[in-house]
Image (cartoon, rainbow over all chains, first blue to last red):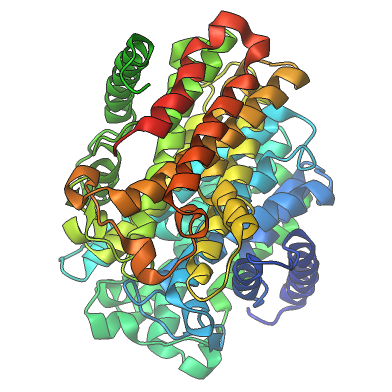
Amino acid sequence: MSETPDIAVLQAEMGKVAEAIDKALERILPAVEGHEARLLEAMRYATLAGGKRLRPFLVLASGALFEVPTERTTRVACALECIHTYSLVHDDLPCMDDDDLRRGMPTTHRQFDEATAVLAGDALLTYAFEIVADPRTHHDPLVRAELVHAMAREAGAHGMVGGQMIDLLAENQEMDIGGVTRLQQMKTGALIRFAVDAGAIMGRATKEQRHALQNYAHDLGLAFQIVDDLLDVEGSAEEMGKAVGKDEDSGKATFVSLLGVDRARTQAQMLAEQACVHLETFDDKAELLRLLPHFVVNRRH
Amino acid sequence: MSETPDIAVLQAEMGKVAEAIDKALERILPAVEGHEARLLEAMRYATLAGGKRLRPFLVLASGALFEVPTERTTRVACALECIHTYSLVHDDLPCMDDDDLRRGMPTTHRQFDEATAVLAGDALLTYAFEIVADPRTHHDPLVRAELVHAMAREAGAHGMVGGQMIDLLAENQEMDIGGVTRLQQMKTGALIRFAVDAGAIMGRATKEQRHALQNYAHDLGLAFQIVDDLLDVEGSAEEMGKAVGKDEDSGKATFVSLLGVDRARTQAQMLAEQACVHLETFDDKAELLRLLPHFVVNRRH
Protein backbone atom coordinates (compact mmCIF):
# COMPACT_ATOMS: atom_id res chain seq x y z
CA MET A 1 0.00 0.00 0.00
CA SER A 2 2.93 2.31 0.67
CA GLU A 3 3.70 3.33 -2.91
CA THR A 4 0.29 3.64 -4.55
CA PRO A 5 -0.20 6.76 -6.72
CA ASP A 6 -2.42 8.28 -4.00
CA ILE A 7 0.34 8.09 -1.44
CA ALA A 8 2.62 9.78 -3.96
CA VAL A 9 0.12 12.66 -4.16
CA LEU A 10 0.16 12.92 -0.38
CA GLN A 11 3.94 12.82 -0.22
CA ALA A 12 4.23 15.57 -2.81
CA GLU A 13 1.77 17.67 -0.83
CA MET A 14 3.58 17.01 2.45
CA GLY A 15 6.85 18.02 0.79
CA LYS A 16 5.29 21.29 -0.37
CA VAL A 17 3.90 22.01 3.10
CA ALA A 18 7.22 21.19 4.77
CA GLU A 19 8.98 23.61 2.44
CA ALA A 20 6.42 26.35 3.04
CA ILE A 21 6.64 25.84 6.81
CA ASP A 22 10.44 25.94 6.72
CA LYS A 23 10.22 29.29 4.94
CA ALA A 24 7.56 30.63 7.28
CA LEU A 25 9.56 29.60 10.35
CA GLU A 26 12.64 31.24 8.87
CA ARG A 27 10.63 34.49 8.58
CA ILE A 28 8.92 34.26 11.94
CA LEU A 29 12.19 33.48 13.79
CA PRO A 30 14.56 36.06 12.33
CA ALA A 31 18.20 36.11 13.39
CA VAL A 32 19.04 39.17 15.51
CA GLU A 33 22.12 41.13 16.41
CA GLY A 34 23.12 41.99 19.95
CA HIS A 35 23.45 40.12 23.18
CA GLU A 36 20.46 37.83 22.90
CA ALA A 37 21.62 36.72 19.42
CA ARG A 38 22.78 33.39 20.84
CA LEU A 39 19.29 32.63 22.13
CA LEU A 40 17.68 33.26 18.74
CA GLU A 41 20.45 31.27 17.07
CA ALA A 42 19.67 28.27 19.28
CA MET A 43 15.92 28.66 18.67
CA ARG A 44 16.55 28.75 14.93
CA TYR A 45 18.99 25.85 15.05
CA ALA A 46 16.46 23.62 16.77
CA THR A 47 13.45 24.70 14.74
CA LEU A 48 14.91 24.98 11.24
CA ALA A 49 16.55 21.54 11.34
CA GLY A 50 13.86 20.18 9.06
CA GLY A 51 11.72 17.21 9.94
CA LYS A 52 8.56 15.93 8.35
CA ARG A 53 6.45 18.83 9.69
CA LEU A 54 3.64 16.37 10.30
CA ARG A 55 1.82 18.59 12.80
CA PRO A 56 1.91 21.67 10.55
CA PHE A 57 0.60 19.52 7.71
CA LEU A 58 -2.34 18.49 9.90
CA VAL A 59 -3.13 22.11 10.79
CA LEU A 60 -3.18 23.08 7.13
CA ALA A 61 -5.13 20.03 5.99
CA SER A 62 -7.68 20.43 8.75
CA GLY A 63 -8.04 24.16 8.07
CA ALA A 64 -8.49 23.40 4.35
CA LEU A 65 -11.65 21.43 5.17
CA PHE A 66 -13.20 24.75 6.17
CA GLU A 67 -11.45 26.87 3.59
CA VAL A 68 -9.39 28.72 6.18
CA PRO A 69 -6.82 30.85 4.31
CA THR A 70 -3.34 29.31 4.28
CA GLU A 71 -1.74 32.46 5.74
CA ARG A 72 -3.69 31.87 8.94
CA THR A 73 -3.20 28.14 9.26
CA THR A 74 0.49 28.61 8.48
CA ARG A 75 0.96 30.89 11.50
CA VAL A 76 -0.71 28.41 13.85
CA ALA A 77 1.29 25.60 12.23
CA CYS A 78 4.51 27.53 12.98
CA ALA A 79 3.45 28.09 16.58
CA LEU A 80 2.72 24.41 17.02
CA GLU A 81 6.08 23.51 15.49
CA CYS A 82 7.73 25.84 18.03
CA ILE A 83 6.04 23.86 20.81
CA HIS A 84 6.95 20.52 19.27
CA THR A 85 10.56 21.69 18.87
CA TYR A 86 10.85 23.01 22.43
CA SER A 87 9.63 19.65 23.73
CA LEU A 88 12.36 17.87 21.77
CA VAL A 89 15.05 20.31 22.96
CA HIS A 90 14.11 19.79 26.62
CA ASP A 91 13.55 16.05 26.13
CA ASP A 92 17.08 15.66 24.75
CA LEU A 93 18.71 17.32 27.80
CA PRO A 94 21.18 15.26 29.86
CA CYS A 95 18.79 15.20 32.83
CA MET A 96 16.01 13.87 30.57
CA ASP A 97 16.73 11.43 27.69
CA ASP A 98 20.35 12.57 27.33
CA ASP A 99 20.47 12.39 23.53
CA ASP A 100 23.36 13.62 21.41
CA LEU A 101 21.71 13.30 18.03
CA ARG A 102 18.44 14.59 16.58
CA ARG A 103 17.59 14.38 12.87
CA GLY A 104 21.22 13.40 12.27
CA MET A 105 22.54 16.61 13.86
CA PRO A 106 23.93 17.40 17.31
CA THR A 107 21.09 18.12 19.74
CA THR A 108 20.73 21.76 20.80
CA HIS A 109 22.56 21.36 24.13
CA ARG A 110 25.43 19.60 22.32
CA GLN A 111 25.64 22.29 19.64
CA PHE A 112 25.35 25.15 22.16
CA ASP A 113 25.26 24.28 25.88
CA GLU A 114 22.71 23.08 28.40
CA ALA A 115 21.71 26.48 29.76
CA THR A 116 21.16 27.84 26.25
CA ALA A 117 19.08 24.78 25.38
CA VAL A 118 16.87 25.23 28.45
CA LEU A 119 16.32 28.91 27.62
CA ALA A 120 15.81 28.32 23.89
CA GLY A 121 13.12 25.77 24.76
CA ASP A 122 11.46 28.21 27.16
CA ALA A 123 11.56 30.98 24.56
CA LEU A 124 10.10 28.77 21.81
CA LEU A 125 7.22 27.71 24.05
CA THR A 126 6.53 31.32 24.98
CA TYR A 127 6.81 32.50 21.39
CA ALA A 128 4.21 29.96 20.25
CA PHE A 129 1.61 31.80 22.33
CA GLU A 130 2.75 35.20 21.07
CA ILE A 131 2.29 34.01 17.48
CA VAL A 132 -1.20 32.60 18.07
CA ALA A 133 -2.44 35.62 20.08
CA ASP A 134 -1.24 38.04 17.39
CA PRO A 135 -4.09 39.65 15.40
CA ARG A 136 -2.34 38.57 12.18
CA THR A 137 -3.25 34.97 13.05
CA HIS A 138 -6.99 35.59 12.97
CA HIS A 139 -9.11 38.73 12.90
CA ASP A 140 -11.55 37.31 15.45
CA PRO A 141 -10.12 37.58 19.00
CA LEU A 142 -12.42 34.78 20.16
CA VAL A 143 -10.71 32.41 17.72
CA ARG A 144 -7.30 33.54 18.96
CA ALA A 145 -8.24 33.09 22.61
CA GLU A 146 -9.72 29.66 21.88
CA LEU A 147 -6.59 28.60 20.01
CA VAL A 148 -4.39 29.70 22.92
CA HIS A 149 -6.58 27.90 25.41
CA ALA A 150 -6.68 24.64 23.45
CA MET A 151 -2.96 24.76 22.69
CA ALA A 152 -2.04 25.36 26.33
CA ARG A 153 -4.31 22.58 27.52
CA GLU A 154 -2.91 20.02 25.09
CA ALA A 155 0.71 21.07 25.66
CA GLY A 156 0.53 21.27 29.46
CA ALA A 157 0.47 19.22 32.64
CA HIS A 158 -2.56 17.20 31.57
CA GLY A 159 -1.32 16.89 27.98
CA MET A 160 2.15 16.68 26.51
CA VAL A 161 4.24 17.66 29.55
CA GLY A 162 2.19 15.35 31.78
CA GLY A 163 2.91 12.55 29.29
CA GLN A 164 6.63 13.27 29.45
CA MET A 165 6.50 13.08 33.25
CA ILE A 166 4.71 9.72 33.14
CA ASP A 167 7.20 8.53 30.53
CA LEU A 168 10.12 9.37 32.82
CA LEU A 169 8.52 7.49 35.68
CA ALA A 170 7.65 4.54 33.41
CA GLU A 171 11.19 3.20 33.56
CA ASN A 172 10.66 2.21 37.16
CA GLN A 173 7.08 1.01 36.87
CA GLU A 174 5.13 -1.90 35.48
CA MET A 175 2.75 -0.53 32.88
CA ASP A 176 -0.04 -2.34 31.04
CA ILE A 177 -1.43 -1.52 27.61
CA GLY A 178 -3.97 0.88 29.12
CA GLY A 179 -1.20 2.77 30.88
CA VAL A 180 0.96 2.99 27.76
CA THR A 181 -2.03 4.12 25.69
CA ARG A 182 -2.84 6.91 28.16
CA LEU A 183 0.82 7.96 28.34
CA GLN A 184 1.08 8.19 24.56
CA GLN A 185 -2.23 9.96 24.14
CA MET A 186 -0.72 12.64 26.35
CA LYS A 187 2.90 12.63 25.22
CA THR A 188 2.50 12.54 21.43
CA GLY A 189 -1.27 12.41 20.95
CA ALA A 190 -1.99 15.80 22.55
CA LEU A 191 -0.17 17.94 19.96
CA ILE A 192 -1.59 15.88 17.09
CA ARG A 193 -5.02 16.45 18.58
CA PHE A 194 -4.40 20.20 18.78
CA ALA A 195 -3.07 20.27 15.21
CA VAL A 196 -6.31 18.86 13.86
CA ASP A 197 -8.44 20.86 16.30
CA ALA A 198 -6.77 24.13 15.30
CA GLY A 199 -8.19 23.91 11.78
CA ALA A 200 -11.62 23.23 13.24
CA ILE A 201 -11.39 26.20 15.63
CA MET A 202 -10.26 28.57 12.88
CA GLY A 203 -12.91 27.18 10.54
CA ARG A 204 -15.70 27.55 13.08
CA ALA A 205 -16.54 23.87 12.67
CA THR A 206 -19.80 22.48 14.02
CA LYS A 207 -19.64 20.39 17.18
CA GLU A 208 -20.11 17.22 15.15
CA GLN A 209 -17.32 18.13 12.73
CA ARG A 210 -14.98 19.00 15.58
CA HIS A 211 -15.82 15.76 17.35
CA ALA A 212 -15.19 13.74 14.19
CA LEU A 213 -11.79 15.37 13.76
CA GLN A 214 -10.89 14.74 17.40
CA ASN A 215 -11.65 11.04 16.97
CA TYR A 216 -9.56 11.00 13.81
CA ALA A 217 -6.66 12.63 15.65
CA HIS A 218 -6.98 10.15 18.50
CA ASP A 219 -6.61 7.11 16.23
CA LEU A 220 -3.92 8.75 14.10
CA GLY A 221 -1.88 9.66 17.17
CA LEU A 222 -1.91 6.13 18.51
CA ALA A 223 -1.06 4.65 15.10
CA PHE A 224 1.81 7.12 14.82
CA GLN A 225 3.19 6.13 18.21
CA ILE A 226 2.93 2.39 17.63
CA VAL A 227 4.95 2.81 14.43
CA ASP A 228 7.46 4.93 16.38
CA ASP A 229 7.88 2.04 18.81
CA LEU A 230 8.24 -0.41 15.89
CA LEU A 231 10.90 1.78 14.27
CA ASP A 232 12.75 2.03 17.56
CA VAL A 233 13.04 -1.77 17.50
CA GLU A 234 13.54 -2.30 13.77
CA GLY A 235 15.05 0.90 12.43
CA SER A 236 18.74 1.76 12.25
CA ALA A 237 20.20 4.85 13.87
CA GLU A 238 21.32 5.96 10.40
CA GLU A 239 17.82 5.83 8.92
CA MET A 240 16.27 7.47 11.96
CA GLY A 241 18.86 10.20 12.53
CA LYS A 242 18.73 9.50 16.26
CA ALA A 243 19.60 6.74 18.72
CA VAL A 244 17.37 3.65 18.46
CA GLY A 245 16.74 0.66 20.72
CA LYS A 246 16.56 2.98 23.71
CA ASP A 247 13.18 1.75 24.94
CA GLU A 248 14.34 -1.85 24.99
CA ASP A 249 17.60 -0.90 26.73
CA SER A 250 15.72 1.00 29.43
CA GLY A 251 13.22 -1.82 29.92
CA LYS A 252 10.37 0.64 29.30
CA ALA A 253 6.97 -0.79 28.40
CA THR A 254 5.96 0.11 24.82
CA PHE A 255 3.23 -1.02 22.45
CA VAL A 256 5.79 -3.39 20.92
CA SER A 257 7.08 -4.84 24.19
CA LEU A 258 3.51 -5.46 25.34
CA LEU A 259 1.90 -6.62 22.06
CA GLY A 260 4.83 -8.04 20.12
CA VAL A 261 5.90 -6.79 16.67
CA ASP A 262 3.18 -8.52 14.64
CA ARG A 263 0.23 -7.56 16.78
CA ALA A 264 1.55 -4.01 17.13
CA ARG A 265 1.74 -3.71 13.34
CA THR A 266 -1.78 -5.08 12.91
CA GLN A 267 -3.05 -2.72 15.58
CA ALA A 268 -1.47 0.28 13.82
CA GLN A 269 -3.10 -0.72 10.51
CA MET A 270 -6.46 -1.09 12.23
CA LEU A 271 -6.17 2.32 13.85
CA ALA A 272 -5.24 3.88 10.50
CA GLU A 273 -8.38 2.47 8.90
CA GLN A 274 -10.50 3.46 11.87
CA ALA A 275 -9.13 7.01 11.72
CA CYS A 276 -10.43 7.37 8.16
CA VAL A 277 -13.91 6.22 9.12
CA HIS A 278 -14.28 9.35 11.26
CA LEU A 279 -13.74 11.51 8.17
CA GLU A 280 -16.83 10.28 6.30
CA THR A 281 -18.73 13.47 7.04
CA PHE A 282 -16.22 15.50 5.02
CA ASP A 283 -16.50 13.67 1.67
CA ASP A 284 -13.78 14.31 -0.90
CA LYS A 285 -12.44 17.39 0.88
CA ALA A 286 -10.70 15.16 3.40
CA GLU A 287 -8.70 13.17 0.86
CA LEU A 288 -5.28 14.22 2.18
CA LEU A 289 -6.30 13.60 5.78
CA ARG A 290 -7.57 10.19 4.66
CA LEU A 291 -4.27 9.24 3.04
CA LEU A 292 -2.14 10.37 5.97
CA PRO A 293 -2.74 7.48 8.41
CA HIS A 294 -1.65 4.98 5.75
CA PHE A 295 1.47 7.02 5.09
CA VAL A 296 2.19 7.21 8.82
CA VAL A 297 1.78 3.48 9.26
CA ASN A 298 4.05 2.64 6.33
CA ARG A 299 6.79 5.18 7.03
CA ARG A 300 10.36 3.97 7.42
CA HIS A 301 11.64 6.80 9.65
CA MET B 1 10.98 56.48 55.62
CA SER B 2 10.61 52.73 55.94
CA GLU B 3 8.26 52.60 58.91
CA THR B 4 5.91 55.53 58.37
CA PRO B 5 2.20 54.80 58.92
CA ASP B 6 1.61 54.90 55.15
CA ILE B 7 4.11 52.16 54.56
CA ALA B 8 2.36 50.17 57.29
CA VAL B 9 -0.88 50.50 55.30
CA LEU B 10 0.89 49.24 52.20
CA GLN B 11 2.46 46.36 54.05
CA ALA B 12 -0.89 45.31 55.50
CA GLU B 13 -2.41 45.44 52.03
CA MET B 14 0.48 43.48 50.52
CA GLY B 15 0.07 40.86 53.23
CA LYS B 16 -3.62 40.54 52.42
CA VAL B 17 -2.92 40.21 48.71
CA ALA B 18 -0.18 37.63 49.31
CA GLU B 19 -2.61 35.57 51.38
CA ALA B 20 -5.36 35.82 48.78
CA ILE B 21 -2.94 34.85 46.00
CA ASP B 22 -1.64 31.89 47.99
CA LYS B 23 -5.22 30.67 48.37
CA ALA B 24 -6.06 31.30 44.72
CA LEU B 25 -2.92 29.45 43.57
CA GLU B 26 -3.81 26.57 45.87
CA ARG B 27 -7.20 26.37 44.14
CA ILE B 28 -5.93 26.85 40.60
CA LEU B 29 -3.16 24.24 41.02
CA PRO B 30 -5.02 21.37 42.67
CA ALA B 31 -3.13 18.23 43.67
CA VAL B 32 -4.09 15.25 41.50
CA GLU B 33 -3.99 11.48 41.78
CA GLY B 34 -2.45 9.21 39.19
CA HIS B 35 0.78 9.09 37.29
CA GLU B 36 1.26 12.80 36.64
CA ALA B 37 0.77 13.51 40.38
CA ARG B 38 4.51 14.09 40.78
CA LEU B 39 4.46 16.84 38.17
CA LEU B 40 1.63 18.71 39.90
CA GLU B 41 3.34 18.18 43.24
CA ALA B 42 6.49 19.86 41.93
CA MET B 43 4.47 22.70 40.37
CA ARG B 44 2.72 23.24 43.70
CA TYR B 45 5.94 22.96 45.69
CA ALA B 46 7.59 25.69 43.63
CA THR B 47 4.58 27.98 43.43
CA LEU B 48 3.12 27.70 46.92
CA ALA B 49 6.45 28.35 48.68
CA GLY B 50 5.33 31.84 49.56
CA GLY B 51 7.23 34.93 48.58
CA LYS B 52 6.23 38.55 48.60
CA ARG B 53 3.87 38.16 45.60
CA LEU B 54 5.02 41.54 44.37
CA ARG B 55 3.93 40.97 40.77
CA PRO B 56 0.42 39.80 41.75
CA PHE B 57 0.13 42.85 43.99
CA LEU B 58 0.94 45.06 41.01
CA VAL B 59 -1.69 43.37 38.84
CA LEU B 60 -4.34 43.91 41.49
CA ALA B 61 -3.31 47.48 42.29
CA SER B 62 -3.16 48.43 38.63
CA GLY B 63 -6.52 46.80 37.92
CA ALA B 64 -8.03 48.63 40.91
CA LEU B 65 -7.26 51.95 39.19
CA PHE B 66 -9.88 50.97 36.62
CA GLU B 67 -12.19 49.16 39.01
CA VAL B 68 -11.50 45.78 37.45
CA PRO B 69 -13.15 43.12 39.66
CA THR B 70 -10.66 41.33 41.90
CA GLU B 71 -11.74 37.86 40.66
CA ARG B 72 -10.38 38.81 37.24
CA THR B 73 -7.15 40.44 38.30
CA THR B 74 -6.52 37.55 40.69
CA ARG B 75 -6.56 35.03 37.84
CA VAL B 76 -4.06 37.05 35.80
CA ALA B 77 -1.97 37.56 38.94
CA CYS B 78 -1.88 33.78 39.44
CA ALA B 79 -0.85 33.24 35.81
CA LEU B 80 1.94 35.76 36.16
CA GLU B 81 3.11 34.14 39.37
CA CYS B 82 3.24 30.79 37.49
CA ILE B 83 5.56 32.42 34.96
CA HIS B 84 7.70 34.06 37.63
CA THR B 85 7.94 30.73 39.47
CA TYR B 86 8.86 28.72 36.36
CA SER B 87 11.66 31.20 35.65
CA LEU B 88 13.05 30.67 39.16
CA VAL B 89 12.80 26.88 38.86
CA HIS B 90 14.72 26.84 35.58
CA ASP B 91 17.14 29.53 36.75
CA ASP B 92 18.08 27.42 39.80
CA LEU B 93 18.96 24.34 37.70
CA PRO B 94 22.54 23.02 37.89
CA CYS B 95 23.21 24.06 34.28
CA MET B 96 22.05 27.61 35.07
CA ASP B 97 22.70 29.25 38.47
CA ASP B 98 22.99 25.91 40.29
CA ASP B 99 21.23 27.02 43.47
CA ASP B 100 20.27 24.70 46.31
CA LEU B 101 18.16 27.13 48.30
CA ARG B 102 15.19 29.34 47.44
CA ARG B 103 13.13 31.17 50.05
CA GLY B 104 14.93 29.10 52.67
CA MET B 105 13.78 25.80 51.16
CA PRO B 106 15.48 23.30 48.84
CA THR B 107 15.10 24.37 45.21
CA THR B 108 12.70 22.28 43.10
CA HIS B 109 15.40 20.15 41.47
CA ARG B 110 16.90 19.44 44.91
CA GLN B 111 13.54 18.53 46.41
CA PHE B 112 12.51 16.41 43.41
CA ASP B 113 15.06 15.91 40.61
CA GLU B 114 16.33 17.83 37.60
CA ALA B 115 14.03 16.28 35.02
CA THR B 116 10.97 16.93 37.17
CA ALA B 117 12.10 20.53 37.70
CA VAL B 118 12.49 21.10 33.95
CA LEU B 119 9.02 19.67 33.27
CA ALA B 120 7.38 21.47 36.20
CA GLY B 121 8.77 24.74 34.84
CA ASP B 122 7.50 23.95 31.35
CA ALA B 123 4.08 23.05 32.70
CA LEU B 124 3.83 26.22 34.82
CA LEU B 125 4.70 28.39 31.83
CA THR B 126 2.13 26.61 29.68
CA TYR B 127 -0.52 26.76 32.39
CA ALA B 128 -0.12 30.53 32.70
CA PHE B 129 -1.44 30.90 29.16
CA GLU B 130 -4.28 28.45 29.78
CA ILE B 131 -5.38 30.52 32.79
CA VAL B 132 -5.31 33.82 30.92
CA ALA B 133 -7.07 32.50 27.80
CA ASP B 134 -9.87 30.97 29.88
CA PRO B 135 -13.21 32.82 29.56
CA ARG B 136 -13.36 33.03 33.37
CA THR B 137 -10.48 35.51 33.25
CA HIS B 138 -12.41 38.07 31.22
CA HIS B 139 -15.66 37.95 29.28
CA ASP B 140 -14.18 39.91 26.36
CA PRO B 141 -12.03 37.64 24.16
CA LEU B 142 -10.12 40.66 22.85
CA VAL B 143 -8.91 41.38 26.37
CA ARG B 144 -7.89 37.74 26.81
CA ALA B 145 -6.01 37.69 23.50
CA GLU B 146 -4.28 40.99 24.32
CA LEU B 147 -3.25 39.71 27.75
CA VAL B 148 -1.79 36.55 26.19
CA HIS B 149 0.08 38.54 23.58
CA ALA B 150 1.55 41.03 26.05
CA MET B 151 2.45 38.30 28.55
CA ALA B 152 4.21 36.21 25.91
CA ARG B 153 6.12 39.20 24.58
CA GLU B 154 7.37 40.27 28.01
CA ALA B 155 8.20 36.72 29.10
CA GLY B 156 9.93 35.64 25.89
CA ALA B 157 13.12 35.94 23.87
CA HIS B 158 12.99 39.74 23.76
CA GLY B 159 11.86 39.99 27.38
CA MET B 160 12.59 37.86 30.44
CA VAL B 161 14.17 34.82 28.76
CA GLY B 162 16.32 37.06 26.58
CA GLY B 163 17.47 38.81 29.74
CA GLN B 164 18.40 35.49 31.32
CA MET B 165 20.44 34.61 28.25
CA ILE B 166 22.31 37.92 28.39
CA ASP B 167 22.82 37.43 32.11
CA LEU B 168 24.45 34.04 31.52
CA LEU B 169 26.77 35.52 28.93
CA ALA B 170 27.57 38.52 31.15
CA GLU B 171 29.99 36.50 33.24
CA ASN B 172 32.39 36.44 30.34
CA GLN B 173 31.85 39.96 29.10
CA GLU B 174 32.63 43.52 30.05
CA MET B 175 29.35 45.34 30.55
CA ASP B 176 28.74 49.03 31.13
CA ILE B 177 25.82 50.64 32.95
CA GLY B 178 23.80 50.81 29.74
CA GLY B 179 24.28 47.10 29.18
CA VAL B 180 23.32 46.20 32.74
CA THR B 181 20.25 48.46 32.56
CA ARG B 182 19.08 46.80 29.35
CA LEU B 183 19.73 43.32 30.78
CA GLN B 184 17.72 44.07 33.91
CA GLN B 185 14.89 45.74 32.02
CA MET B 186 14.52 42.43 30.24
CA LYS B 187 15.32 39.96 33.01
CA THR B 188 13.29 41.40 35.88
CA GLY B 189 11.70 44.51 34.38
CA ALA B 190 9.66 42.70 31.76
CA LEU B 191 7.36 40.82 34.15
CA ILE B 192 6.94 43.90 36.34
CA ARG B 193 5.95 45.81 33.20
CA PHE B 194 3.42 43.14 32.29
CA ALA B 195 2.03 43.09 35.83
CA VAL B 196 1.20 46.79 35.65
CA ASP B 197 0.11 46.58 32.01
CA ALA B 198 -2.29 43.73 32.74
CA GLY B 199 -4.47 45.97 34.91
CA ALA B 200 -4.48 48.58 32.17
CA ILE B 201 -5.45 46.03 29.50
CA MET B 202 -8.27 44.61 31.61
CA GLY B 203 -9.39 48.10 32.55
CA ARG B 204 -9.43 49.32 28.97
CA ALA B 205 -7.10 52.18 29.92
CA THR B 206 -6.57 55.09 27.56
CA LYS B 207 -3.28 55.25 25.67
CA GLU B 208 -2.06 57.98 28.00
CA GLN B 209 -2.95 56.03 31.12
CA ARG B 210 -1.29 52.91 29.77
CA HIS B 211 1.80 54.86 28.84
CA ALA B 212 1.99 56.45 32.31
CA LEU B 213 1.78 53.02 33.92
CA GLN B 214 4.47 51.64 31.64
CA ASN B 215 6.80 54.45 32.66
CA TYR B 216 6.00 53.78 36.30
CA ALA B 217 6.79 50.07 35.83
CA HIS B 218 10.04 50.92 34.09
CA ASP B 219 11.36 52.99 36.99
CA LEU B 220 10.00 50.63 39.61
CA GLY B 221 11.64 47.65 37.92
CA LEU B 222 15.05 49.29 37.85
CA ALA B 223 14.77 50.46 41.46
CA PHE B 224 13.80 46.93 42.45
CA GLN B 225 16.82 45.44 40.70
CA ILE B 226 19.29 47.94 42.12
CA VAL B 227 18.08 47.06 45.62
CA ASP B 228 18.41 43.37 44.73
CA ASP B 229 22.03 43.99 43.82
CA LEU B 230 22.56 45.93 47.06
CA LEU B 231 21.05 43.12 49.11
CA ASP B 232 23.26 40.59 47.33
CA VAL B 233 26.25 42.55 48.62
CA GLU B 234 24.92 43.54 52.04
CA GLY B 235 22.31 40.93 53.00
CA SER B 236 22.97 37.66 54.79
CA ALA B 237 21.96 34.31 53.32
CA GLU B 238 19.75 33.81 56.36
CA GLU B 239 17.77 37.01 55.81
CA MET B 240 17.49 36.40 52.07
CA GLY B 241 16.67 32.66 52.17
CA LYS B 242 19.06 32.11 49.27
CA ALA B 243 22.76 32.31 48.53
CA VAL B 244 24.20 35.85 48.50
CA GLY B 245 27.41 37.37 47.23
CA LYS B 246 27.11 35.34 44.05
CA ASP B 247 27.43 38.27 41.67
CA GLU B 248 30.66 39.39 43.26
CA ASP B 249 32.05 35.86 43.25
CA SER B 250 31.27 35.45 39.55
CA GLY B 251 32.74 38.86 38.69
CA LYS B 252 29.45 39.83 37.03
CA ALA B 253 28.82 43.52 36.40
CA THR B 254 25.91 44.81 38.52
CA PHE B 255 24.55 48.25 39.37
CA VAL B 256 26.54 48.07 42.60
CA SER B 257 29.82 46.96 41.04
CA LEU B 258 29.53 49.73 38.45
CA LEU B 259 28.15 52.56 40.61
CA GLY B 260 29.35 51.69 44.11
CA VAL B 261 27.01 51.13 47.07
CA ASP B 262 26.23 54.79 47.82
CA ARG B 263 25.51 55.93 44.30
CA ALA B 264 23.46 52.79 43.66
CA ARG B 265 21.34 53.54 46.73
CA THR B 266 20.84 57.17 45.67
CA GLN B 267 19.91 56.02 42.18
CA ALA B 268 17.30 53.62 43.55
CA GLN B 269 15.76 56.39 45.68
CA MET B 270 15.66 58.70 42.67
CA LEU B 271 13.97 56.08 40.53
CA ALA B 272 11.41 55.43 43.26
CA GLU B 273 10.49 59.11 43.35
CA GLN B 274 10.46 59.34 39.59
CA ALA B 275 8.16 56.31 39.37
CA CYS B 276 5.58 58.13 41.47
CA VAL B 277 5.63 61.20 39.25
CA HIS B 278 4.19 59.08 36.41
CA LEU B 279 1.14 58.32 38.56
CA GLU B 280 -0.04 61.93 38.86
CA THR B 281 -2.84 61.40 36.35
CA PHE B 282 -4.50 58.87 38.67
CA ASP B 283 -4.94 61.08 41.76
CA ASP B 284 -5.72 59.35 45.06
CA LYS B 285 -6.65 56.07 43.44
CA ALA B 286 -2.99 55.29 42.93
CA GLU B 287 -2.01 55.57 46.58
CA LEU B 288 -0.84 51.97 46.98
CA LEU B 289 1.11 52.07 43.71
CA ARG B 290 2.67 55.32 44.96
CA LEU B 291 3.82 53.77 48.22
CA LEU B 292 5.26 50.66 46.62
CA PRO B 293 8.52 52.07 45.19
CA HIS B 294 9.48 53.39 48.62
CA PHE B 295 8.74 50.04 50.15
CA VAL B 296 10.78 48.29 47.47
CA VAL B 297 13.73 50.60 47.98
CA ASN B 298 13.71 50.16 51.75
CA ARG B 299 13.13 46.41 51.87
CA ARG B 300 15.59 44.23 53.75
CA HIS B 301 15.04 40.99 51.79
